[in-house]
Length: 324
Image (cartoon, rainbow, N blue to C red; front, side):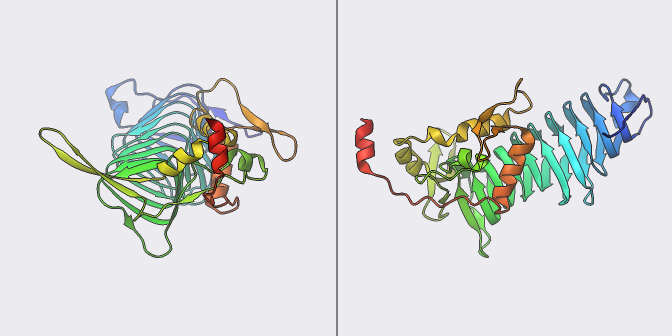
């Protein structure tokens, strides 16, 4: 077990290495508003944090309280280890991490002007003016007032004026939205929806339900353009949706997929008072829904280690008649 030294401080700038802060790091006087906090590695902060700039040079690091920075939250590109933010993270400017060897996890929402992340897991949603994600998983939505750039990522949904996509993109909810037509990199970009995938069985290592699977979205044919008007403003909105397929399949029994329970447990993980499970896995052990296990599961889908079957789209009409 790692050893931590307790730290008391009143300096302008704070450096943490092999330290446990048993409380918050909040300014108590004007001079501390411009304080820079540097986490050099092996540090735990048990309360909320306010800093002019928060820099993570290396893991392992945990911050148990909410975080707000005036300038930026920055994770060094060569950082390694686990870096965990258990509550909401906000910045008046930027939240940036391009550390592809760091296991970065946010177990709540992120709110900033600009968010750029690599190899990160976000259990909540991202709210920003500009968002750039590469090899990331966002269980909630990505909501941008200006632009989104996605590369090889899984997101719940998105809503933005403009969006560019590259690589393989997965959606967890039936629809996503943009104002401008989606900009697609022509070199092998694939767009899938996991709404009807049997995520519960995949999480437990069991065979997938034959009627389940991922749905490939054709960005030309599955786009719906809507014009919204009132007395003064006219606005166009494009949605990329599989809602028609979902409504048809919903006449069958999709509750057994346990997707809703899995995603809810992921997004509420830091707020739940107990750890839930979704039954026994392939080895007969309880499949507990912890943040670490859910993170690992979605990254294995992202990296192709867990293969989600393609939905064939066929169902027996007699099953639908029987429902009525």
